[in-house]
Length: 382
Ligand code: CP
Image 1 (tube, rainbow, N blue to C red):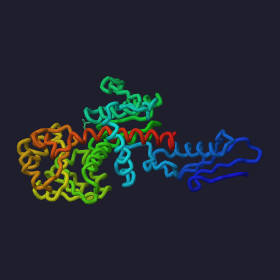
Image 2 (image 1 turned 135 degrees about the vertical axis):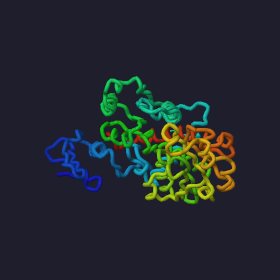
Image 3 (image 1 turned 120 degrees about the vertical axis):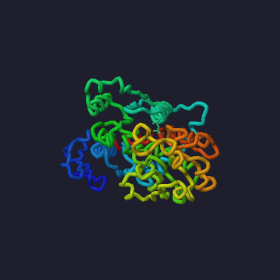
Image 4 (image 1 turned 180 degrees about the vertical axis):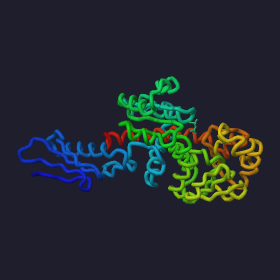
């Protein structure tokens, strides 16, 4: 019998003397081995078929198949930043850089993702994330469908997972999901064949926001490990803060967290951050000041007394920015409450504020994420 092992013994390709086609045996940890015919007589094709089969069975986990391309991020979903290691983050940022240049061209259209189908499924309001994914998909030639979830059969009692599996039956390539339930994107990714991107799940995570923030920082500073970054405001309810803490920690930056005690979650003490309750101490020596939206609908009168009091203590204006480094930059994921967490003039000051640049980087990052995930589906997915 002719045989060959791939993927450290997880995949065996074999051919008996009297059989026509190469056979494959795939063994995943904790699962029974699967044996079937590859349906081909050619060893090279059989290997590819077996690798693809292995990857589709193992799709949620990282697939450590050696690949000729320099691809570092080999998963088919992007749902949590803690799944990303330093090399993977750097790879995504590097991929996005080519799209920054592309997005400055007069004609911003290519066919990298022609014939691919992407669904925007936003169960919460969004301007930046939803439209930037739409722009990103269309610039890459994909077909993007915005599902009007407010008019969907969810209103007739259909469960979210039923809606997702229904859409999944239309063979989409990517589902982009924003939803108030924490962890829902991960759950969906385990129930559909399509790639899933978490576009914000409750107060939990917003991975592409943190990636675009990192790309914005990278455009101004060479080395993340030399940076001190302040994240200020309503940390308790902020998925942006959670994802940024994870990614900036992984990239080696120092992080100061600033906010009133009532808006700092207890579990943050386990993270590699320093916690401050006043801007003067927290902003000292910072290169970047990231302000967060005060989620007025959830916290006014409960976690903070009123907007004016909040602005006096924690709102960023030129006077408080002077506590940071002389040339420190200001960031904000948007939407902003002008005069509550940030002074309006400072927000618009292009010599200090990177807020509009963040929006622009958002398109590049989302183009990179779509391209990477769809390529991974082709190479390692189903
Ligand atoms: N930063 C962000 O997620 O903005 P949107 O809510 O407008 O998408």
